[in-house]
Structures are given as structure tokens and as C-alpha cells.
Length: 181
Image (cartoon, rainbow, N blue to C red; front, side, top):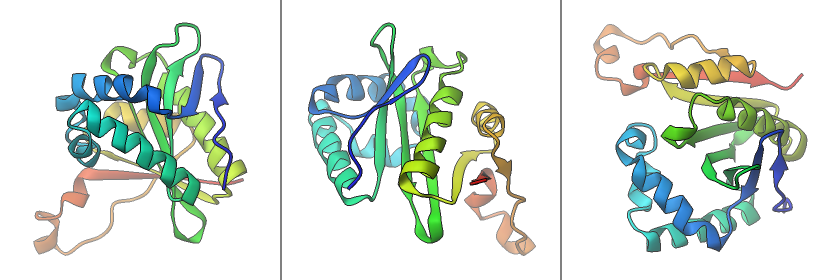
């Protein structure tokens, strides 16, 4: 089991959630629910109330202990404000997938890039991943820019039969990879 230790960047503290974080966690999801719906529907479905937030944070702690999923809340170090969430899910064959979101008010300040850099180090150095994946929708230009700025390389879209292309929602998702050097 990996220790539940925070990661620090110049401006941010990324730390595993604690039960006391449930109100902030729920508040951010609730405030930005329409914006998060396309990319994080499962998270929003699981957290419909403050009570659900409590349950979800306990699940995150269980997932951490089992090594299934490592979820960090993102806090601004100077103000203590909760600004978002970032996670790493280990997968087969040394791969890991990273997901993240920020409060609308926290976007455009470089926080996603800063948090992503810390999670890349965590994934490669602590978890032992060899390849990391970030997925985002084609219309999520900011998400793509964050991945590229961190050194992730886009994967070419898969070749599919014409009859299959129009019905496949996966065509709307860009995949970016970073390989451990």
C-alpha cells in the first residue's frame, strides 16, 4: 500500500481526500455540474448530495489502500481554497490513466499544468507506471493544451469502417500518451 501523502508544487497541495473535505468536494461538483457532465458523468451520478460525497470519499480511501485508484484533491497553498481534483488509475501492462478537473474560477491560471506535472512524477516514480494516458473530448481545447504542455503526445485516431465511424462516440475522444524516459 502506498502512503497517503500529499504532493506539493509551487502553488498547490495535492492530497488524498479526508472525510472533512466532503462539503468542499460536493460544493465544487454541484456548482459546476453542467460543465462537468459531459466528461465526468459517473462522478456526478455518484455525488448527488453531501451524503453521497461522504460515501465517495470513503470509497476513494478504500481504492487507495487497494491500489486501484489514487485520487487527490487540489488545494491552493496560499489561500487553502479547494480548486479541483486529479487522479491516477493504474491499468494493465504498466499503464496509468490520469483524470482531472478544476473549478471554473480556477481555470486559466496554470493550476492544471502544475497539478499534472506532480501526478506524472507520482505515476512514474511512486506507482511505477511506464506509460500514462490522458483522454479528453475533441472540443476540450484547454484539456488538450494541458496534456501537450506536459509532454503528452496525441495518439492518431483509430481507423474504423465507415459504417462504424458515425456511431462511435470514441471518435469524439482524443488520447494523449506520455512514456517514461
